[in-house]
Structures are given as structure tokens and as C-alpha cells.
Length: 211
Image 1 (cartoon, rainbow, N blue to C red):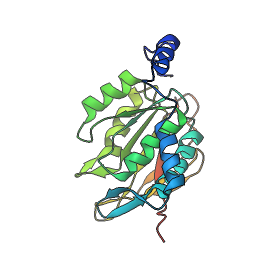
Image 2 (tube, rainbow, N blue to C red):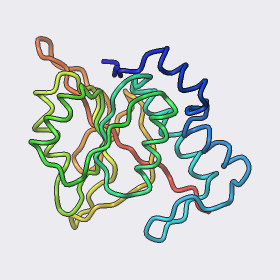
Image 3 (cartoon, one colour):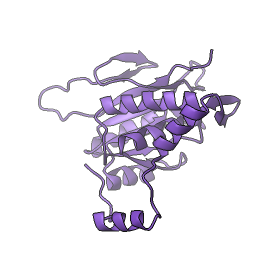
């Protein structure tokens, strides 16, 4: 389902003519900074320092992963991530593809998330496996049978044996690639005949680029 706005071609042309809007996108600005200052620090997240060059590389990887899942221009992807650097990877990746990044607070629970996903007709949902002792995978697994537009659930991080959240960096695994971790299956399965297909969980984890 493509997201439609109230913007018309005439309105866009008028703002561009007046100089209010330019042709730059978030991604084009990021690409320019990465080219001119690849080693300059762009983001600091609890001790992790990500340069512009590293940020662009990771954004490109995540964008490729979303594209492999069928996410494209106009598609709505709801993001429920804490204030982590991985949010930037997802946001810039979706902006690069022309998709709509629909950010919601990490404290929202089933009632709010169900309404937002349904109202926005989101094609994909991005969340941590857990945060502040809340199990997001369990929540979205319970909600997804009632969300016909939701085609993919992307999960960041895996719980360790002690129940603590582990935060890998980001890679979107293409549909069809199967992985098992902590009891979750990542990839696409064929549903038995007579049953509607359900969105599968996809791991989002990118190997760190630091040497």
C-alpha cells in the first residue's frame, strides 16, 4: 500500500520556485558528508563512535536488505526502536528507498501499536527483541494475524541466555535466507495449503566495521 499525501505537483513546484524546497535529500547530504569527511564522527551512542563513512556504509547495507524484502517508494515502515544508533541506519535507509519511516515511541504497547500499524497500513515493522524487560517479539507475534498489510517484521538484537538484550550492528537478511537464533526463525516459510501467509521475522544485524 503506497502512502499518499496532500502534496500536489503544483504545490511542490511552487515551493521549489520560491526556494523553500531544494533537491537535496537526507541521504544525499549524508553521502556528501561521507565523501568529504569520511573519518569525522557523526554519531556517538553510549561509547560507540560512528563516522560518516561508517554510517553511510551501514545505511547502504540496511537499504539493500529492505529492498530485498520488497520495500520501496511510498511503502510505510513503522519503527519502534529506542534512541540507539541503529535508528539512524533504518531511517536513512528508508529515506534512500523513498519509503515512509513512521517512528513511534518504544514505550507504546499492544493497543497503540496495533492501531498505528493498522491505520498506517504498514508493510514492515522494526523493533528490538527486548528493551527495558519488555518482549517486543511476543507483542508483535500476537498482533500480526490481525494486520493483513504487514508483510515483514524486522527484529534488532537477540536475548542472551541470561535474558539481557544483545545489540548487534545491522544487516537485513534477504527473504529466503534461513537462520535460527534463540528459538526465532528468520526468513520465509511456505504456509500449509489453505492458510494465509503470515509475515516472518527477519534478523537485522550488521557486523561492526571497527578494526
